[in-house]
Length: 361
Image 1 (cartoon, rainbow, N blue to C red):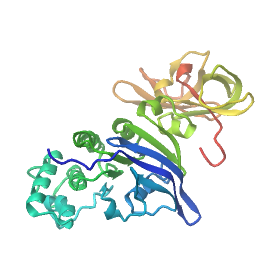
Image 2: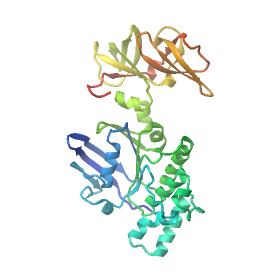
Image 3: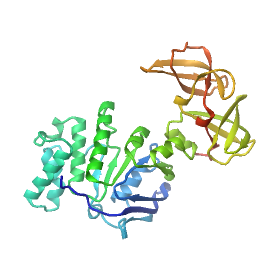
Image 4: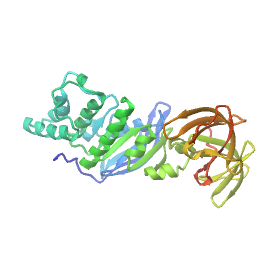
């Protein structure tokens, strides 16, 4: 394999903003991406992740701040002058061109000699495992194959950056898993630098070296998958890291990095992730995996079971408290619908956050 992506040391976003009239889609986003990193931009719809990617690509101009590739400012350059590879959600293949022609299109536009185009296209076909499909039209390919063509087209021009905007969202669950592994393999084999937009925490956790969580156009937290999974810094980050149970209560005590909440008369203890004060409102966040059937006592919540589903090795249930709080929990045995049970969590696995500012969940 002789495809070698252009070398650089870092991409740097310096207080980048993007306004659409009165809407601030991005607000002072600063981020440094090192060569060969796989960065995932994660967040809900409208958080600014695709806007960030489009500003890096040059598809949207920034309205504040700057973007740098090493010492070169690039936000003033046209998209074609940046030379980045882009993989879109809808593949964006030319329906009248076959696989080989689609992959080689960017090289042809650059005036590369035919023999060189053929060589590079063959290398790209090999990298994405599409040999034997090169003469087919996009309409004759599966969704996964079409996405491989889109990836090959993006990397064949040897870009300094590969930008991917939710490339797997149109695929079914099985293909998403397969393509997830393929994207990481291609990234590793090329020694590429990849920025990947997704709203799927599983994709971000499995693919990325670092995850950037955005909300309302602001970077909320940056860290490795392990750092974000085990130690989300804010309630909205915890929500995206799978802490589906959020219990609102009053802070009864704070000591040595731990907090005790009163939740509907029940006491819940956990690790304080933000500055808390006695008497304030806070939220305990718990993953379903960490909320299990237990006995009355410490960190136990009395609930009524609403649903229970068999998931092979375990059961997943939903329940509600007398005060109307909703819960998702795991069990190793079936639980009778409508029964009253106690759900319990290890206090080391419970994270406690201050009440979010108004307008932010």
